[in-house]
Amino acid sequence: MSAGFRFRDFTPEESTEKGFDSLFKIFMQLVTITSGDVSEALSWLNELDKQHGLTDNEYGMGDFIEDLKKKGYIDEDPQEPGAFNITAKSEQNIRRSALEEIFGKLKKSGQGNHRTPHTGQGDELSTDMREFRFGDSLDQIQMTESIRNAQLNHGMEGDSFILTEGDLEVRENEHKSQTSTVLMIDISHSMILYGEDRITPAKKVAMALSELVKQKYPKDFLDVIVFGNDAWQIEVKELPYLQVGPYHTNTVAGLELALDLLRKRKTPNKQIFMITDGKPTCLKEGNGYYKNSFGLDRKVVNKTLNLAAAARRLKVPITTFMIASDPYLQQFVEEFTEVNQGKAYYSGLKGLGHLIFEDYKRNRRKSV
Image (tube, rainbow, N blue to C red):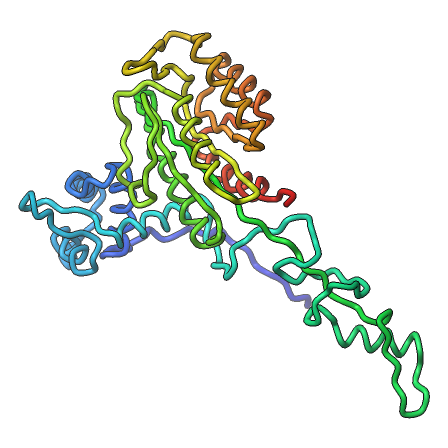
């Protein structure tokens, strides 16, 4: 009688998970969507509770709010009695949740630097072996391999053992490099037009990337800027609160600020990621703005392309993530990318994080 396996249909049991942990996962999503508005997030959570029975007689919504306060995720607003704000602990948790959602759970790395194709007197031992060369450090010498080479090359004569420079074998070191990255986020009004919430996934990607750099590449630099009618730099801790404004899209201002920030960085590798869903429609002129939302304006487009060329001369590749499918917009991005010699992706929001993660790793593999 042969051994084997018996297969049958699997019917998953309905989840009965309740309590703080299950509510907290939903709350973290809602507070990201509401840009840090705790009251609005809790109101939505109450509505979901009514529809889906998230709480029971043992653990109610009031218990959850008290636990949020006790665990340090929210605190009361001193200027508005009865209102709450999220804390720094919540901000970090939101970033970590975004990282796990978009990139998957990553193991923490001690050094956090990416490898380059170069070897020599670098930072980390590789698996490659070679003969000893003048200038190699003593700790690179692999004694076991070197002694074996000496035995093979010279044999054993009585009690004598001969080891020459030609017998020495060393393990290569790999160079690793720092990268300075500027992440540009479009916060123009079109990011919430047509009933689509495009800003929330864009925020999640930005938060995930910032947490990725902190955990995996602590020696890197990451600057985050937003652009609408103007462009300005924001702190990573401000990302959960990011909102779309009644703005046009001044891509030129965003690129100018990004290049200014990168010029100040002394790292050999520099790059820009730009998340946008629309064409450039705005320029700053003196104290006013030049705006045109109807089609691609030649004046705006040409200045944008000039900056793409300037970035190329500075050896700063721009990776554009276009959250739009309009053919004429894609044509503009193709021209922009060709001028910069960067990369472009026409992505649905679902795959945005994966593409950024893959390119973040690839763009870091540069010569130093």
